[in-house]
Structures are given as structure tokens and as C-alpha cells.
Length: 181
Image (tube, rainbow, N blue to C red; front, side):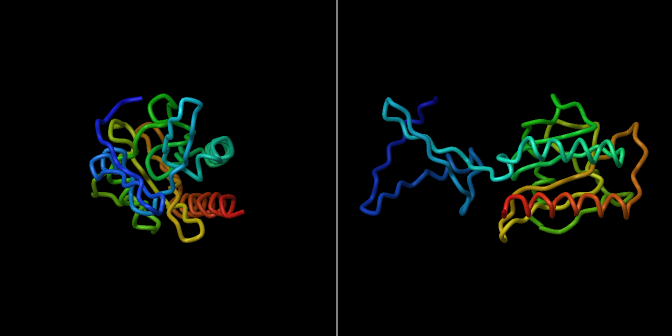
């Protein structure tokens, strides 16, 4: 654990303000859920809570099935990072921070399609070999949870646009239902 040197007092309602610098660095936005942990030494630890993170193995199985059936590479993300992928090298994508462009697509809450002539949208900030072909945000109970994206790699045949869109939208809707249940 890293010390910040910042000290805050608890107010009469039991609230503590997390400094803006830490919120920005840790990418904590207004309304983000935080999970609270304690240990025997009296430490209280706040961790960003990812509802889709609880469906990690289920999301991975869904991504693998989409890849196997449709032959398309797929990533499933929470709001910050890739939590499952299939058809791509896991070491290059899993648990990596999303690119600002993919975050923006998710925040837009609409289906995204890559159009010829437009700039490719990278999945993560470091990844350069693959680009988002189609993406659909996962919205559960009105809250943005993450997104499902099909990925185009240079060596793969592009998927049929209509089928690809329907599969990605179905995956996003299904995962949202699992979170709501």
C-alpha cells in the first residue's frame, strides 16, 4: 500500500472526502460504487466495485462461445478495463486499461460501428494490432456497467455487419440481465 500523505477527517454524518487528485488518478467518478474492506490492523480500504467483475468467468465463457460460434474476436469490458476476451492474446488485453476512445463509446450508450475511412478505435491504450469493429455498452438498471465489442484483427475476415451487430447487442443485453437478476 502506498502512502499519499493526505489526511481527511470524518464529518458528523460519517463521510470522508476522497481528494480530487486521487479520484482523477484512480478514475473514480461521481456515482461510482466503492467496495469497502477492513483488516485486523485497522486499515479501511476502498476499491472500485465492478458489477460485471462478479460475472468474470461467465463473461469469459460468453466471449469464448461467441468466438467459437461466430469466429469473431470479442472483448468484454467493465468501465475501466478488459475483463474477458476470446480470439485475442489474453496477456495483451486482459485487465488492461481501456483506450479513451473505447471509454467514450461506452459512455455514449449507443451501438458503435467502424466505418471505412474513419480512425480505428483501439481496445487498450497499448494495443495497436486490433481495432473495435462493433461495440455495445452494457447498461443495467440505467447504470453504465461496461461494454461488449467485436474486434477486427488484420489477419481475420470481417464479420457480416448485421450478424455481428446482433450478436454484440445480444451479448450486452444478456450480461445486463444477469447483473440485474
